[in-house]
Length: 359
Image (cartoon, rainbow, N blue to C red; front, side, top):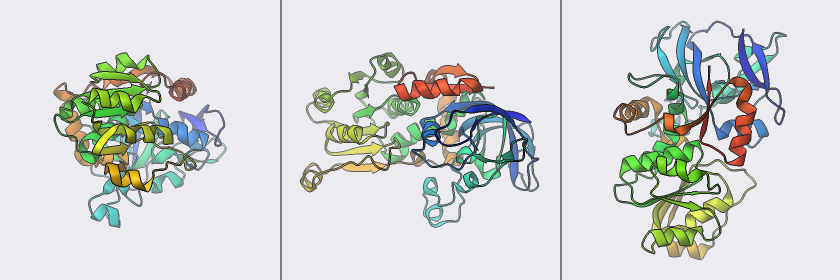
């Protein structure tokens, strides 16, 4: 029996309860969580913006220590520190074989199979296949990434989503080059990670945009050279800060049509807008045919930072060891399992950076 934060149905309050985990079967790994980040995707699953089978244990950004392994598991053994991968690639579907594992057609397979149970026998689903809002979890072997040396286990949880997404948006999706200008809309955990990644890439200037004036200090700590309070004049302000041209790159980390439009209008002719945030299916974005031609901008999205965690986490670990990437700076609140609802409220209100459940 382990303690977990359970979502009984979409829209219901989280319930702190005990669940039963089986012994890991063939190809499965049991992990004792050290920490789990509270991501906006968890909130989207809880309120129905993203679909999830229920009852479900949410949480997909985590790190911990291997407790036991099932038959056939040979990549890790008990005692190994690991990062959890919520989007493991199957390696055999069409998208995997053409080198785009972040779009794997089978990456969500684990989330639609029960993995644990309540004491009365009710089956439970793992949120995004991981179920990190619990003291322990069981995942498939391909959802395990051995943690490289030199990275603290607790803060390493952020490598599992926020940092991979933010770093990947800059380095994999947009491929920002030194000296290019960047504007980042939305300064939650992912947006702050984008700022750090832009600094590592040598971007200049790095402009941060948020609705909360309280985010300015955080933005500058993570690499922003300029901060703008979001309003209708934001695109004009971005152009003023970029020699009248607009930014070479805009990163939208909110997931709203109005912010996507603002990011589009803030980029130069021929610039690139990368949508990182996850929006609602009914929140439509429109562009005229003329402006699409006239501005010759590129609008694209990235999923999980277009990352391959097996290859990218060692790269991120090297940045951490070298002091270029500060994981602890992303964490503004260290909390317990029963404080996740309050973390959801802070996130919805746009306050703080990453909340981290520490076990």
